[in-house]
Length: 228
Image (cartoon, rainbow, N blue to C red):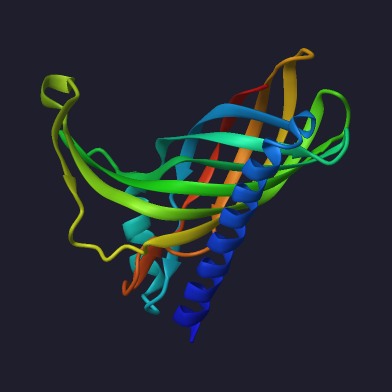
């Protein structure tokens, strides 16, 4: 039942976001004055979080998680914004998201786990002032690849030993995340704006299926963007 609900939830979310994005594109050609578009990059920190789905011993779970560390991650997307008025806007975008974790450094090596996703997002943006704003919304993710990178440290020098597809885990094709941000227009001109936005993204579901110990992605980073 839970699996069916998750699939229905993902399907509804994907259709809703896709239709909204297509509607934006259609309206953009007829009402250019109400629209802005832009690009943004998001260097993130991917936090390690665990979901105990197999009633595992808590001490066992803690021992495993003690060996896993947070890692640097990266996202980027292109977006289209519809302005209802000077305060309220609706934003839809397409992009790329990376998350994951890494092992602790074992003397001369560590393992880095990278999960790469296609992102389709829709956010509501509210301007408190001309420059300060808040953002809240939802993203739907489609899993593109899952890489396991092995890094060696011979003579204290970093060397990538291998970077291969993870075929041992059955990953979920879809996931959903909640987006929350609070930002500032560093440059606010008539024709363009450059903004900085501390950003939080929280995955609602585990990244894998049929596992006793799952992972949920949690990202905290800085959104740097330009809007025209």
